[in-house]
Image (cartoon, rainbow, N blue to C red; front, side, top):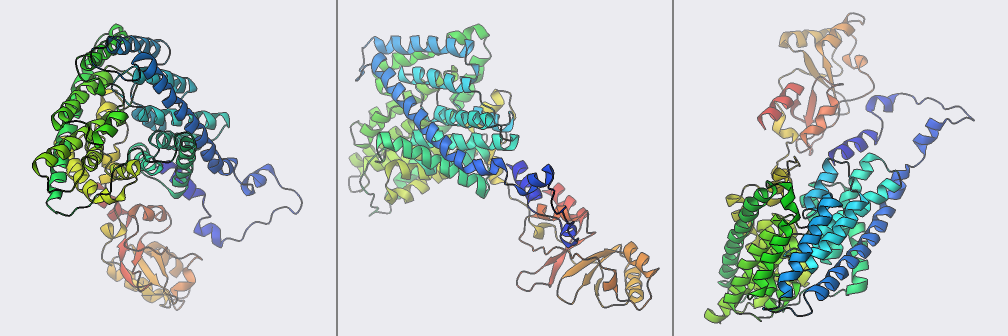
Length: 593
């Protein structure tokens, strides 16, 4: 992103010196190819926004097909209503795991994993390149695994599928490498938005976890693609929120304590899940490659055993089970058991290398924990007015914030999947507690942990969010150089600079602007001009840039090839000095940062 911003800033306009120079007159009748290239709109610029909408539509159609494929496979393998004791619960995930492992090892090696880190790797390492073969492989293998009961979700694969579509479209149109790199997150937002039916959450997650920062142009394209994909998805699924609960009314402030407890429980549970994945995944990957063919099958068999012996609800994404939990269908002890066994099933499925995502299992665990606390409250604190559904929804956000470490996304995700904005206060409270607790107990986010395990070096988005950028006021120094009037004679000016032993000084002009000169420049001018000549006669046409204390510090670096030092002015009283900037001072401040 920074390369793109810097390059565009460099191309945005002429330098100060170019601005004051007289333009060269072009030939009256002949325009060269270079001239036409300069004045014509860039092809990439014309296509960028239009392609964002096109990518959103295609991604939306693919994600809808992906979800339909998962449902078909689920009905074919597990039946419409799986229950304990069915042998298909053992056979289906085992056979699917064997088939998926063979496909991944023989044909689609890049389809392994959730899809989030793979998209980040495409963005930061491979210049946005995701092969269409990977898109096909992700679609087939994830649909087989999730539909047959592996404890994984469709959202992360949908993100990679959308990014792959965007990469393919950009390559077909021979767009520049910078554009190709930008199209991956645009497609990722489209795929995730269609999978969640929640455009704002998808946009925020891509910004928080994939690109880390944004510019207005990129944000506009991401918004267009996400909205386009959601429009397509809602054409098939309707516009109703994923979950429906009554409005939340907090009549007793003590009820916030229950949500705070949920935040603590969610933070600890996210730690358990992260530790389990961080322990088992690298150990399975360190086994001989021949074992990669049967690891997903063994994981599928173990997940199937959980379903066969009593808890088939933990198999697959589990959105129907979440909805049932929100309506008080299960007792609180069963809800806790579902949460614990979902952690086990997800750890087995994901660590084995089975393609599939972490979003749905995270939401499932959070919903079960939230519903269990809500059910417990109804039994022992009946005077509280909170519903089980409200606690389940807050629990979903809590695990999302604690495990995936996307705090802003977690809040909007709960609001979008429920369409209920009355729940925002409990969500913010519980999510904040879970996020802070998770950060203190597990400093490295889970996606970064996976990155290190895979031997990659991708930027940490959490660290980028926590960085405090330096501003000019952090490096500005007191005015310790001579400050002269532009009308001062050269001889007097040279004497004042020499007495101060200064190598550079500032000149204040009649219109309030500033000019910076070196002592050598002044000495050279004094040798050829009369002593009474005012120093303003020495000036070139440009003036020192107007810098203010609140501007980013890196804005000033580009001016130092031209200026020996820079004046820092007061915004309220332009022309009044706040201090000065020197290159040495800026570099020293960066070293201390």
